Length: 253
Image (cartoon, rainbow, N blue to C red; front, side, top):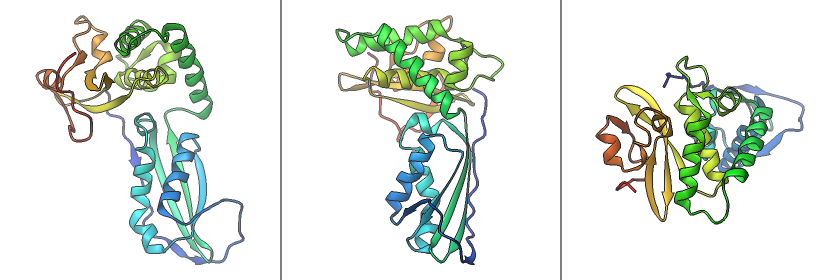
């Protein structure tokens, strides 16, 4: 997987107090409300948004980075969906005016296309009589047949994957994440490495147990080598990841 640089530039120094005319932007008083507001805008793929924080300056300075981190970390798909986040803040007589500029992998319109396309696919390949195992199998096989690996390393989003039929591991794992969610399968996008190369894959929960699933590498000569395996199976094949961050897969299926 290509090393995609993601940056967050935090303007820690708040500008001097200034008198400003009140604009019609959202006011938030609590840190939780600020986090939820940021999350809402990220979900909507808003590239520029402003809110007024009416809590204390110290509280803002101590927590703005964490609020942003926690906002995009609410969802694995969203966490992989941004490229750059640049907040800036001005102290006014009414509170701290905060503007965030964000760059994403996809636009709001492209995300709508993704949702419509994947929901339609799930309706066509999944039925209510299927077990969770059968659903995972069908989704794995669909993505393997739909995508080819992009050795140019340019197709990094679900949108580019669906429209070109090629993707890197990020496209595979993000597509799977959305499809599993639509099918009612609890799952995660795991970010780690194979040897020293960045890589992402999925883990899925079936009958109360978690299993590792690397659809990118299932789409290879060694088909299904990484279909519902345990942590130890990945470790034996030079995978590494933050095991405290993700559910443990104690055995293969």
